[in-house]
Image (tube, rainbow, N blue to C red):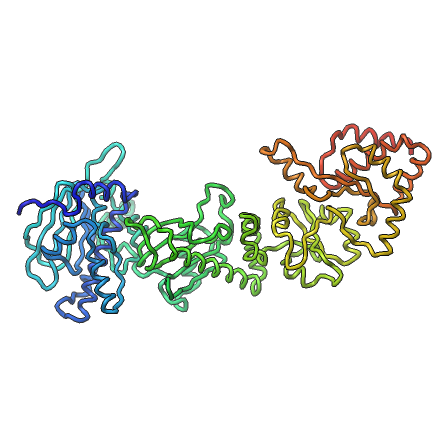
Length: 630
């Protein structure tokens, strides 16, 4: 027969299909297997009403052949097949999808059946690896068979052939190897196994191929014998499509470890199905431990995407929010809109609906774990709590309502984890703020001078042990109606009216000495004042409104912060401590000596707070001198 040209703008459009639409050459095998699966689906569906379409069950399979001597790869099915007219229509016209038409006819008849193909371009992806393609097909209910052959841009030829079985056989003559591309790898058993496992593991029909098997030589135990046997390469039934009641925990565990390359069982499995405007099945896992690179830029979050059980994309970030990026898993939906190559998600309403649904499901699962499996949740939080906190202060607190009840802090009550809800529910009636203190360890925070007064009043203090915790509280500002308050910042307002009057009286009586101390320290402090937060310690340094002491420490470690932002510091002195009486005595007798005492007390307060002092050598000398004078 005479060679025909493609009907759809010929060479330019075909070049676009081969060189622009598909970014990954290995996709071709997924597309051809999906087409074969569609053909088998059509034959099975039509056989329900027409016995002439019926097939032996053993023929409902997809076969792959590798011929290394002729550099040919063959994909064959016993599906519905095509006659000459259908070959002309489906393969002679680029972007003409027989599957799409078949689906439309079913929709008009209000019938439902899974058909993968929709764009009609998947077949042409084979030209990325093949220099010549032959399609041999015989339609069900017909005696004649036909071949369609093409080398791509030079058109195609349709001829009558002899074919004994119904179905389609696609023969790819692979391109010659180049320095950049080894097309012969698609004839290797390992490569085909890997691609089927990756993309088509859950196609519902067996995908068979002749494979090499090694067995001990019965005549020589030190040797092996290699034989060729037909092997099924795919699993066929995906775990996520099975009823949850039929799946054992160890099956989930093995699936997770094999699929997501983890050697530990997952901590939590979230398996559910949604039916509605957008239907999908999700199988999600929370790992038992954070991946080694979880908090580094090279970690790639996202869920795997399947459509009709066929793998489409890996690491789809749009399906899971950044603050839940620790979740591994997959989503299988027939409703997602994909681009023409099925390699990229379209950013449409359906994607956003699924993503929002997934977010709510993860949030609900975490809330349930927190409520009913507290110890398990605390293990989870040790692994991924920092990511939840990051989600709160990222985007200026846009997601704080979603996450604020999922974060935990250690507290002064018993050193154990507490939620903000638990903290506020057990607050004394007269307590207005949520108090917190920053430090590297619980012991360090417990030893802070400001803690004693709060313990006396039975006020619980949250331990901010991570340097980012204060960022979280500053973004949240408050929880319910209770503001966050650092015990080392501003005025704690812990005194009774009687105590306030006594403080005012002592401040007035000692205002000249306090002024002299401030003058001695210069711009190192904003103010020297009598403290209402100290009980047993002589002095402490606190921050005025604005940058906190912890923020100063954090920013000072940042090489990108050359200006070294400083907190506005206030030196507070305990009027009931013997040191205060000593200062009064020195100011009355030798006011010039007050400068050294002021410097030592400030450095002492800074050291207690974990802040650096300007001159450690000078500090040590002054302490020694004052000890001698004492």
